Amino acid sequence: MGNPPGAVSHRWRDPATGCDIPVLDLAGLLAGEPDARERLGRELREALEEIGFFYVVNHGVPKALIDHTFAETARFHAISQERKDAIAINDDHVGYLGFGKEASRTSEHYTGTIKPDVAEAFFMLRERAPKPLGVVNRWPDDLPGFREALVEYFEAAEALFRRMLPIFAASLDLPSDYFIPAFGEYEALSMLRVSHFRANDRLEINQFHLAPHTDSTFVTMLPTTEVPGLELLGPTGEWFPAPPIPESFLFNSGDLMKRWTNGRFMSTEHRVINRSGRDRYSIPLFIHPNSEFVVECLPTCADARNPPKEPPISSGDYLAWYMSQNFEHVAEDWIEP
Image (cartoon, rainbow, N blue to C red; front, side, top):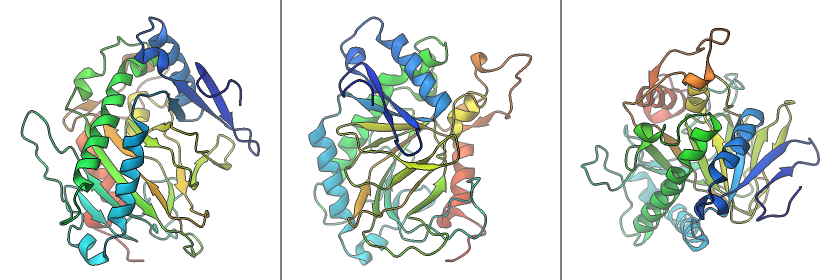
């Protein structure tokens, strides 16, 4: 794999396909080393141009907090179906999403024959901020500690993302504060999803726990788990597993990042198939610019020979379109499984 875990940077290589996922070590950045931003920017640029994913280690988010959030996720999904259905997901995209209520219709791999996903999830947006919030999250009754754990994890993960904004700017030859207007301290349009993929499901043909898809995001950040199931589409068209590097986050760039960089950074297809025989849980944080922010081609990603490929669009408008295509609760033409 190259250098051992904890080194400045290294790569994980899938032996079957030869595909690499870079691993970025944030220890120098968090310690204030003067060259860390530029060095990590180069490594991040290489990762998002080549594969669209990278791991982050020595990130500063406490392992105990991540472990506790996974435990609370499992505790939530163990409650009765009736209690979960009582907080069914609404038009603000908060609450419980049941099995068969999502299909990845924005994916290039969607053919119309792929069945809705065999997964369930709970969604939340920002819970607190100095100013009034426009969305009220939906929480289960009589589950003490669940809300507090998710809010603490949400804020810790988002704080890590904000610490990394200068790295994203460096990767694109932009000033270190370039992305602050789009995200700020409380301005990002962030969405936490706590998912459950059951053990021993008998998947039918053209059925997945999560079908091949790209994310709508600027970036998605996912703490790894020892239970496998996540697979990425490599440059040669082969699917390969993302290994659970201990105490790491796996980041991927999404559709808005791809638009913003004029296709320079990838939005890579990925999927989940849980063959482990154990229940799999995941707690990704999906991060978009604030709802009103207009995403248009960055100045360092276009020139006379490479003009912008996509028209400007607000972050909120893109997310609304994406959700309307992939989720039953906001789709106008949903096909029942």
